[in-house]
Image 1 (cartoon, rainbow, N blue to C red):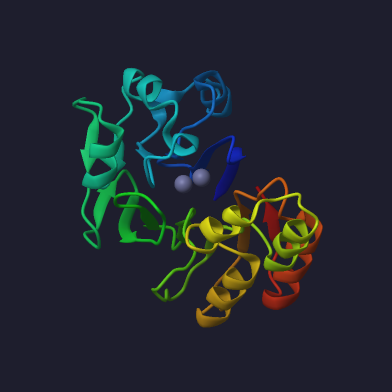
Image 2 (image 1 turned 60 degrees about the horizontal axis):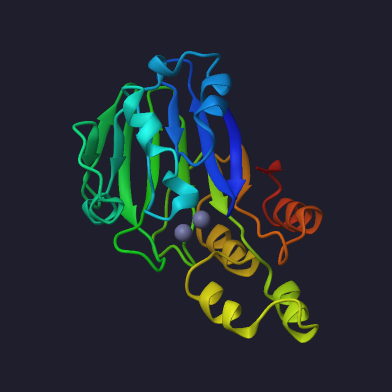
Length: 232
Ligand SMILES: [Zn+2]
Ligand SMILES: [Zn+2]
């Protein structure tokens, strides 16, 4: 399975996962041209686009994606908050699996400061089981037999605290981050709580510009899990 990050930060997120049968777009806040390029100008092959929530850095290009004839899947709360009427917007329900090409997709609720944010568990016939979770400070569920994890790792509490002490980051930002984004410390706890015996790869997503450290995050998660870790 091929996982490609086109964008992964508060400036814009978009990923393509491709199992050679049904390529999927996860989030869509990059220039549509970049999505075209990443698919080899075959956007019509995309089985769909999954959108986790209404923040612009996750759905900024939705009008272009819809116009290109790609169905966009999201919660009812997210669809309402985005506020676009379009026949290609498909709403899905929490914990109700649905099929998209070769994938069976289970949406699940996550913890973020928006109306109805989802994470997605994606399984296909090749035995791949991929977890996609971003913009959540915590995941309350445990998963079995994951082969791929794509998870936000926005900041480290140590770096954030240092930045607040030095006046680089306002204290109010900390209050928001604690209740909206995944810290390195919480990602570690999440990984420890889950069965990683089938896990092949971990992708860390949506790193903060100020409050993260790519090398440190990669080393620490690699040391904890013994699996290859990539920074998206
Ligand atoms: Zn975001
Ligand atoms: Zn967000």
